[in-house]
Length: 377
Image (cartoon, rainbow, N blue to C red; front, side, top):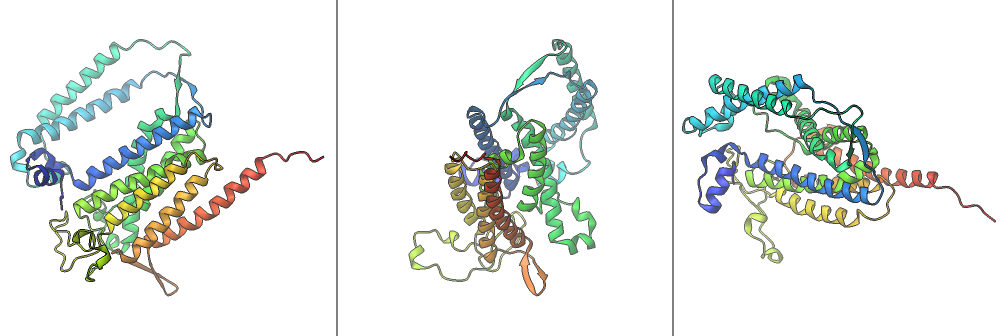
């Protein structure tokens, strides 16, 4: 297992790059997942614009908010100098746990002030050399140009949702120690929480820029499945605890071609430092395979003339089935209701499958209602 990118590069290539100790392996793959989703959605938005399903529009060119430009550059410059420059000069002292340093109040006030002034000065130079905007000036805005901001919105709202759903799932721990919300903020993330909150943020932003919510759902469905598969690669390579229950069964002869770790794995050197007494099902890797297969299916059928919203409904069904199946061999706390025992993920998976099925029916009915009847002779 590779808790950080440093561990992976060192083991695979025999190269030691101490700076990579600050890059957590799980976070690295989450970032790759966002980039993969950005690519898929950009390609799909361009295709749909070319086909006339969505349109570019003229957007007024507004002058930059000078106060915000200066404040944001000051903050970015200060953090850069306060943390990164200080770390560059003192890396040997903090290399044992660079993540703890980044989340601490330790740093260089001098370098923070120097870079804050430098960033503000550069922004002043930029603003002074920016041509004045003519009254009423506009620019052509294509829907795919949203993707930079959409990625940031999805990351911020998705992170908040992922943390919230995790702590709702482990509510007793939150009640005992509310500070767990702020301790180790990059652990304890649930995919479904991130999906729901991140999706809401994306739909809000897309609607502001002329893309209907049903169309945006269809654009995002395949991309979210691709991002999920990439993210699960981070779960497996870092050993973040999203593994399965113990698997002491011998590997069947018909699966002899698989490496032993693909059947049962003990996740040595995992990011939490947990020593497993017995090997477990490597469920993150199974989810990687299933997610990529589902993405391939969704990507191959995305050009079919479905009513808007149906492709996303198909995604919901696939995503629900995939997670519901894997939960049977995955470690997760169970909830109890009316004598039934199930995990939060199983409940949400079932809801996804139900919503996907109802969505297909509803979107097709909506299309029938909007299609004018042909006159009869």
